[in-house]
Amino acid sequence: MNPKLDFIFSRRSVRKYEDKEVPQDMLHDLLEAAMAAPSAVAKDPWHFIVLRKRATIDKLKDLLPHGKMLGQATAAFVVCGDINRAHDQKESYMLQDLSAAVENILLAANALGLGTCWLGVHPREERMNGICTLFDLPEGIIPMCAIAIGWPADQPAARTRFNEKSVHLEKW
Image (cartoon, rainbow, N blue to C red; front, side, top):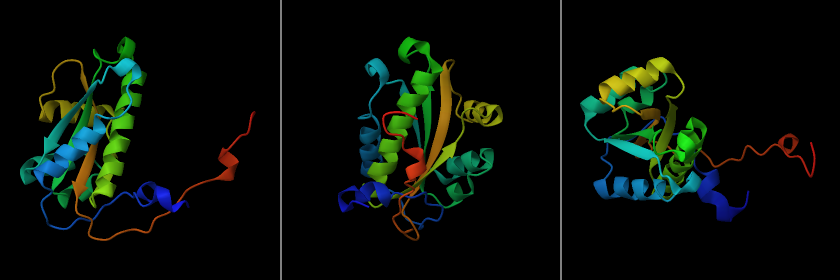
């Protein structure tokens, strides 16, 4: 692993957090990093619901079957897209834009010493409907995922998942 890319290889899904608040300015840094992501035709269809209150984070945890770690996270984001702002109003473009923004959040959090875990929402109807109801999302706003955020209780080792069988040179 190239040590210059350690900020990528050391990014891991964190499921255990310390009981320590994430400062508001760090959350702002993560949102700035998110909005620096590429976007098809610079449409920037993203919206971010910032959660800091324990009661709200716990309500989100209860909606997501694999969101147990939210019970320890001291902050969370719900990442949504505006289908009407997406390039050609295409869901695929919106999801690509949001995914780039999420990856920027995950890498920025790691660089700042924070831990994160990406929690899938889209395309699970029951999860999407639950989030739409809980956060009173307007028409055309589609929840894609949630991100647990906090100070990691432990630091998993850096690793790569490189697989030569997935690389094809010039042809399949």
